[in-house]
Image (spheres, one colour):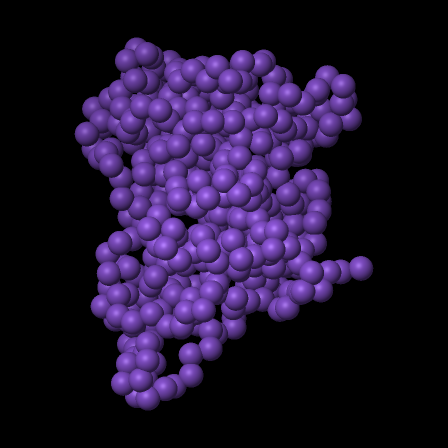
Length: 443
């Protein structure tokens, strides 16, 4: 029998974009979400929020990524409040990127995000302790899963159809691929104990592989100008061939002998193809005897087969969902649906969990939207600009909640722009948590 809104467990949610709310509400109907401001500092937490959390009955906390303020972490530890770190799973979506779409899978970790190598995570503990030898059925599922992902060329963001032959520079000798990442990415900040740039990795690969052809594939978001790099590929063009033309990662991985990466998931996809993989950081798949590790991780210290590693990462650790209705499901069903979506096209109802509800903001003679509510007219001008700088989903999010949209921006410059356009906060946090539910699930 489904739980009613009054008996769901209160869950305090940190760093959740408003567009994600309806998805999380559908995936976890047993939770009664109490949303925090998207950015909250230690002082504000101590002054305002810890008392509000303490007033809840048996609460728990979820946070997207590593974005829990230290004061909140200390408070939860002192009160024995469970904390769950949520991230997209390793099968995320179809279409080449995440964007505003419901994920096929999520990871929910009670210790830290899976990419944070500074301490143990639930994933690390699972890989370190699970008796894979005693579970031959699981290993066979893993073997079949690897074969299916390779056959259908499925990765985190869906299928990437083969072109038959990849247009790489010709030449004798081994091919060594350096996989570029966004250097400010959390997986590097929390998964590499020493700062390293993509160009440093190119220089390392060139130094360790004299006579080999060094190929450098910058991150697609860097090539598109969506994310800013910390190093310029032109500075190492004398050491490598910089791959700037669009090409599917599976095609490139199939065509090389050795892969260098900092912490990218591409390293795991290379392992699945039997390639030698060197990692300068400590991603979740390092330290198990399958990779050439340049950052020691003595906590792991166990050798796993590729099938055992895959079983832990894809079969046991994540939670899988139907992105159209939030129903829990298994890896195999999820993979089959991703293959179908890739083959037949993304179905028209794939976004049904994404709410189109506007946050109520009635016209008032004065308040957050200014005298006579004149700032309600700003979306007529600002909306097209948001769509041009970002995309149509961004513009729709802005129109649904103009003030909240800018308060959630990761770019400080955009937050400052939002504060200039909308200098006053509304009353969503005036008396407590933000309880606006963007979905109709369990309301």
